[in-house]
Structure formats: structure tokens, C-alpha cells
Image 1 (cartoon, rainbow, N blue to C red):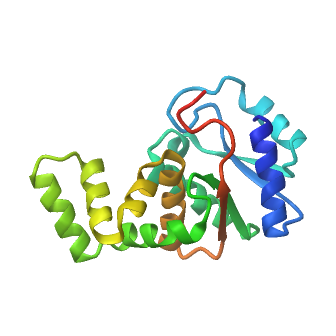
Image 2: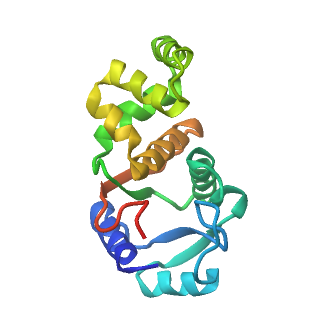
Length: 184
């Protein structure tokens, strides 16, 4: 937990009008599958000091996984509480309306998308690059660029998960400040 997280909590409360904040945080195993520098109790204490009202743990079975499993686990848990109205996350896109059409296409995988994806895969492209090329063909270069950025990737998975489980949680996002996902 760092100042960027505290800023995120404050910004989320402003954007949502929420009076209380639940933070769902990985325990000992973080998203990239490595172990957290501090133990989960210290990190939870820092989150409370930084403005969270309640800290819950995302189980390692979800937190150590790829983005789609991480997001689906988080959304399923948050929805099950029946107390969460908003999901707030940082992204490079900074706007839900930039992310929604991409998430919808990736969730529904219409025939045109599946065909384009298969053509790029047959041509020897990796899955990730084939997906980007298919998105570019169908939604434009900006959508493809958005889909490649690490925080946007998780944001897209959150949006897909909200739709998959028909959650009533409203997503909000804003431009991330500070170091990117891959920087330490």
C-alpha cells in the first residue's frame, strides 16, 4: 500500500459519492504470482490508515492467476457481499466509455471477431497479437492500443466479469498516476 493507493481511495470516493470503502486485496500471493514484500496484515493495516474502511482478502487461487481469473474472482466476491455499489480501478484509458466497446466485443466474440482472430493465428501470429490485430480491424487502432496496456487489460477483464455474472456493481475508472504496472 502506497500513496498512490491512498489517492485512489480518495479519488474513488469523490467520483462515486461513496461514504465507505471496501478494499479487496491479495494476501500473501500478489497478482503476478510472487509473494508480497509485507505480510497481508501489515498491508491491510496500511490500507486502513490510507482511507479504507474494510479490507478483505482475495484468495490466492484468484490473486496469483492471469487477469481474467483474477477479475472474475474479485467481482464474484464483491458482488456476493451485496454491499458494493461501485468498482473503482485505475487504467491507462481513464474512461469507461473507451473500455466498454472493447470489453463487450471480447466478451461476446462475434463471428467477425472469431474469423479475424483465426486468420491471424493461422498466419502464425501469437494469440495476444492476433487479438490486437482483430480488434484493430473491427474497432480501430485506438481500441487495439487500449487493449495492450497492462492496467487496461485488467480493466477490460473487470468489465467482462461484471457482465458475465450480471453484477449490479457500477464500474468507475480514472487515469492511473505514477509508475505503470510493469514499473517498480
